[in-house]
Image (cartoon, rainbow, N blue to C red; front, side, top):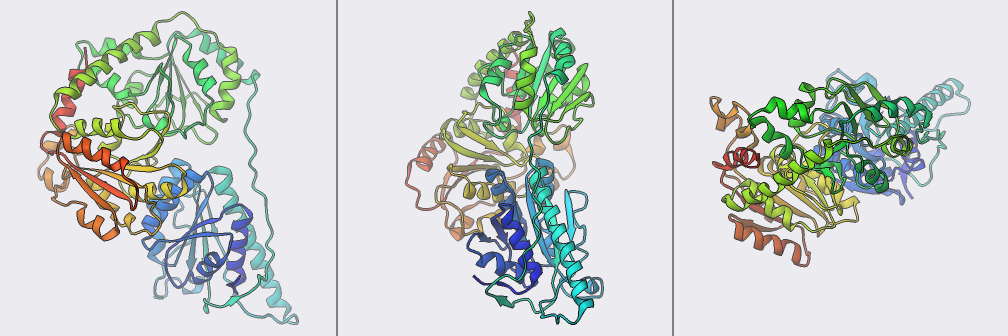
Length: 578
């Protein structure tokens, strides 16, 4: 095995491997050659070459999300590193472990006009868990007699090894992004057969956090006195909470449980379509009275960020007396009333909490489940009567998605339409909700597809797809990877937002209307391409999309009329009110 002759590059590779980090996404460059050659040549490393650094970072994000462990990124110096920032921010807010390893010029070359040189030190400081800034090393033979150089070299080596360990351990222990900045002197391409270093390995601390039944006693007492408790679950990994705990929680008539598609939780007594329940209340005859009946005394939250703006507005206006959040890492005061953070997993909390609670008489849950049932009936009636539009297309897509499927949704209107429909337990739902940006949705789904054993479908909008079209410039896309692209010729979500449609130059600067399609991109990148412009074509081509043998990845582009989508979505919430 050949590896760089620069000891610092050797240390980075060996310490990554010592902590189980063996998936590395590399973007081309020269300054990062010692890292590129060392990672790519190592038999225990799965190395991937992706040219576009922004796509590479989101690809790594999707992989890390599925692998449940850090994935490393390697880039050259200069602006290459800055292209990682959108994915770094997403990883920071979504608690996904990424290890960014950037090559750099030595410190004396910064700000003197050297090419491909920027201030890389602490470049992600507002959205990173740890930044390791290493010392440069020169690959040369040091005479044993030159003790001063030996001492300085040894001190630099110790500093670097400590910093690399701290960065990698932080990514593992805290599930988030870290940055290791590695300056190299030239020459960059020297290789040796054996490593010359044996870097210090500092073990990460990964002990599960626990809580005692005694510590929950007073909270269980408060819980038992309340007749209206709302449990709200945001982004959550599939199969992370034991089903028997969820079943026990669902037995309590005083507990109403709200989840979203990205919660990946399923139970017949859970309300999974929050907006379908809340939005009609806004246009009811007496909204104040309706919301007061829904207002909980205690709010218990699990998981990550919540999509629904409706539930956020409701809980900020009709605040609970108590808000408790359960999470091993952080508790965001999303609803401006947070009282308590339980720093443990949902499983750990429920295992010790549920045996202490009783089930008081209450009609809180059942009264709103009745409302939910009526909404579901009206939902089906409305979908049946409307013409072909985004909402109708989404209904057909959800109905035809296979049961065992990894499903990625892009942001904006796509993930919001998804909140109106029911998904199966075997369908694992993902969306980049950390920063909720449209950048990187396709790249993330491709990374997820490569790392997962499940077939993967991306459901995306036209702007999100076109914005991240370099995601298809990727040699690792599985043959069974599918994209369903809903093309309504612009940013349809802006038509839904209050007041936006009446803004001057709306179609140019907000909706950004266009006449582009994915046809030529599919031809260039080797995707099979189909289209649908009405209900019959969509149903037929969805059947073909999942029925045919996969010789290459496939894209189905669904064209919907942009001038009516907002009308039928707004009318939907009025129709399902009764």
